[in-house]
Image 1: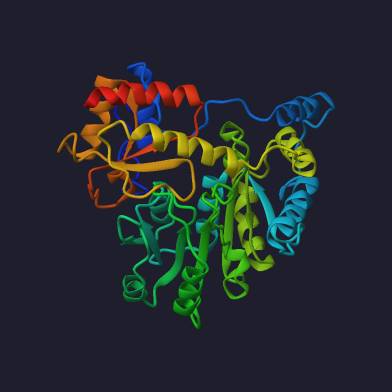
Image 2 (image 1 turned 45 degrees about the vertical axis):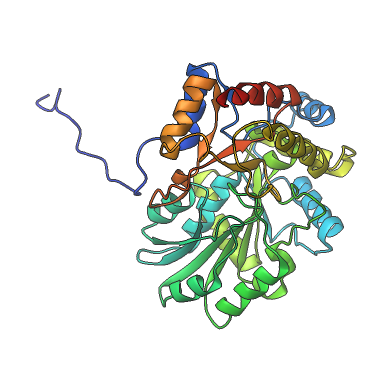
Length: 389
């Protein structure tokens, strides 16, 4: 009884990030001030009616118990067929595909499968904010390398200089969040040259792989025969079918990598909700909707046309993803975090500052808008932003 009222021992800090993620912070601020939320990357329009109906049918027809640990066989097979159709790749549904509760989980699980204390991981910044905490939670060290603005290309000399005997992995994101940049074939060839004759593993975050615009092409790490043998490729159905709340993703990797991945997965999540997997499998087999990149490019183009009537600066149109970076230097010299909060409170539009995507909080006076919204949402948001003049 003598411990009653005494504070608990301080819990260990597993990573260097502090506070709540910027996405949660800005979405909460948007709700508090009744702002239009162009911050967090989620659509505000209905998903495909067929997919919605299939989810209800799956639950109604009794697909409500545990799916196999690796994922519903029908879904893994549908993914393999889909990749054969879109990329011409042969994927072993049984030994190379694992269904996960979202892509962020898949990234963490891949890191946990390969990292030990003291390992180093090269991270290209700006980077999705889960990467570095995931690395540090596994006792490893993140080595940030800045991409070159405004196009956010890779500086290959910097990566070469960053590789040491302790380098265990490099994490790539294409199409890139938050910049919308995409990797070319030559980028993959350059990476292959750097890691050849090493044991460096590649994590390729390709969650926006079907959201590529202007006739450009997404090149997957799986299309590079040499890199495919040392890579985890990570995907999200939420970004393909605009159902981010379903939190279903998957990992494609060589059999030995998949075995290591599943050794962790089976004791963390074990499996993923069965009705959602069943619905996705049926939808992949019967999908007749317009290509998702066509719909999203229309939204990007509409948003860019609206931004012309605001004082924001568009340096480069996004080549892919849900997001458009803009500069606000003509509006304010506030730090980006302060500017994003001010814009939400005073003008009713929530955005994401770029500095949280850097470990050192580098501030280039850039913010990220999500254009994966209904046209009327974008129209109303920009009508508010026009008042900044």
